[in-house]
Image: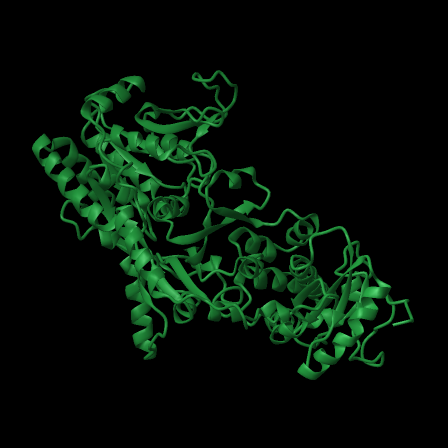
Length: 637
């Protein structure tokens, strides 16, 4: 059975990333085909919500006070902890998966933490990446060259292939597209009776045409364009009863209330979804602010507009789609846009732009194409799409004048088209085909970057300047050839603000030293797991090699037993010599040799409240090379 670590958002966070994995695991987990571990980005390892799933779940943000202090002092580390990069190597060491499946935006997985690591090249690394704009970031191209790379939409795969062709590069890893997964057993049309009842519950007239948009309130989601089109449509059609329904948070991104006021739109015509933090009951209502009292459970100041942290269950989301008559999904760029796929599954007519992932939906003849003009984005230089407001107005008019027969025809076509491509059973089948094509991993000779990269003894060149100096420190102290942009900007800014090179170098040296100490602590914990589980103290007898020495060393063990009758006697040697000690009455446990076990101070826990053993004996090495006498005060051996 292969073991898979899935790295993406926690399932209890209301994001497209979490919805995708939830739908996939719903299909895969019951098959009992893989050992599943979910490494949850953006969640503390102590979060109690991690315990409610049948598979193992791990939070990406450490709860250890020392780690928290370290992370909070460095924005780069804070970002890495949130996305999973800070602990990922330790998770790989602990879990030993055959496959690491990473799904998020490209900047979540910097090459120096993932595809360019030793372990990243040894195991089966899958990058499931949302690519939403051109030109393609160099990090995405590098990730595609060094991992099994799958885009959420064909737009991303096509652009990566163009980049490869331009470079005349032939990938050795797999490259393809696997769309987001939608649970069609949940996202489906509701009955007319249920729609009428829900409208009655929320005081929405049966004759109202309700245009819906779901999406996190980010600048790339063009809520402002929908509002401007709605204003224009209302002016052209003053008798219309049309309304808008926005399922999003009103406290981030676009200042929706202010835009509505500036456009002189009647606030009664713009509805939103409110969700109670306590009872999770939702209601559809015009926007009246946040922290409102819940009429359902009676709690005070507990109802807010829907958000990532306070959303609705999938079953309720289906009802919200069902209340609407059509979906308008406009964005400057998008990686997949669950709103598009889910609205089609629920049988709603959809209008969307044809840029980035939108081009995948507009090939369906039941989808209304909103034309766009290309514009550039400041700083990034990305090409973005500005939607044509007149096309949104035309869609509104089209829906209001459309016959029920035509609506039913669009409904049938949309559901069939979407289920063939995005149904969770279809997507899970694609992933299982990919998983099954990859080999199992042998961890016998597995090596990790942290075992040799951090170097607190590095001597920096303080005469370098700016970016060159910071890259010099990253490489010398931390072994990071490709530091992420956020970390680089942070440290360059500190240089530009006049902080001394010597002071910054000292901070990097401290981080490198902490990494070494963390490695020592992790290694000690790993060795402790191999020790006998009883209340006795331990004697560690280190005999790395060779066959002759291990055989001769047997003559010493009886004397050690006589001197330490109440201790566990543990032999550390190369596993190929384990058979020498099998059957020896004076040996309680044999464990694999590790270089750190040659260090007496490490073994006896000098300066620490934990140790591997109380007595350290390594008869083949003299005191000129290693300490070999501090803990062994019995001279009769």
